[in-house]
Figure 1: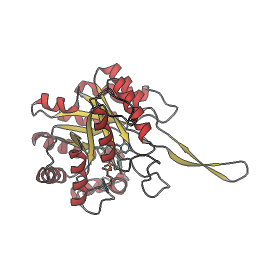
Figure 2: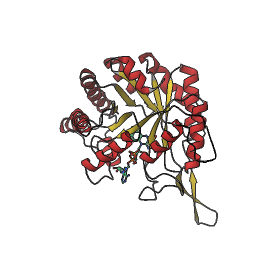
Figure 3: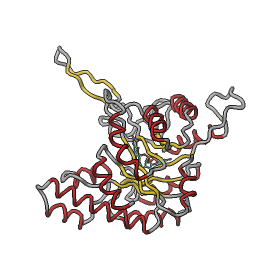
Figure 4: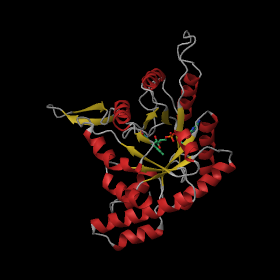
Length: 319
Ligand code: FAD
């Protein structure tokens, strides 16, 4: 079923969903099941699986020189989605990125997804590779998420890259895209970022999942700004609990978000006590979740990052 149909069917009730990362190459599905098994009692209608582009690593050779090689450390998104659907009988939403894909690669993945009856995709650009400095698309790949949305829309009307294909099977993808309540790091300002978000919706995306945030007011303001800009699709808040002291600075650096004063103060107060810091993070996320739920968010989307115990502790208090 489509994610947007779940929202409609819920009639205002706030759903719950989780996001998992494929295990590092060499790991097995057990890592995913270990994360999801304890979370299934909360009845998520769908679970997202992230997609990871290849990264460059440097290997020292016998000669003393280093060789630069590209490896994908977390492959398997499509297979994991199929496995989740099989084991739990729920929908799985693969993330699909522009980085590392030609348009032809993208088309072939979308064909696989269609054959697996995967109805939903979160369409993203992907970040720059670590040593690239800026996002570099593949030759004949997409520059922006909106281009990916357009390609999916083409397939939804039976239009494939090869113009010789006539009467191509029409896919029926429900497309989600990312939104940034505190602006995407590369956007010159919030208003410009919002214009590009609107372009993704106008191109055919039907829901938005937000970057994590720790101040609910940022989400409420973002929703208001979207509505004023004519973006009327469901906006799902993405939530990640803070669990470690260093995240006070790593999360703002990595995700271009701000930490509210009260959260910083509460963590500082228990600095050095790992358990207490985690507890502060859980309580903060529970309070965020309860308010978002009370104010009618369509779904709370938790970034699990393999920490099912923390997410469970939160979900138990909210659902
Ligand atoms: P876009 O919408 O393409 O925007 C990228 C930047 O370009 C923005 O600054 C935007 O303002 C600007 N822009 C957009 N369109 C145009 C245009 N036409 N002309 C000029 N500028 C433009 N990354 C992964 O690698 N794998 C994942 O699984 C993954 N999952 C994510 C899930 C969520 C919910 C979120 C919020 C992010 C996720 N990311 C993931 C990270 C995401 O790929 C990065 O944030 C990336 O830098 C931007 O992706 P986007 O889809 O928002 O890009």
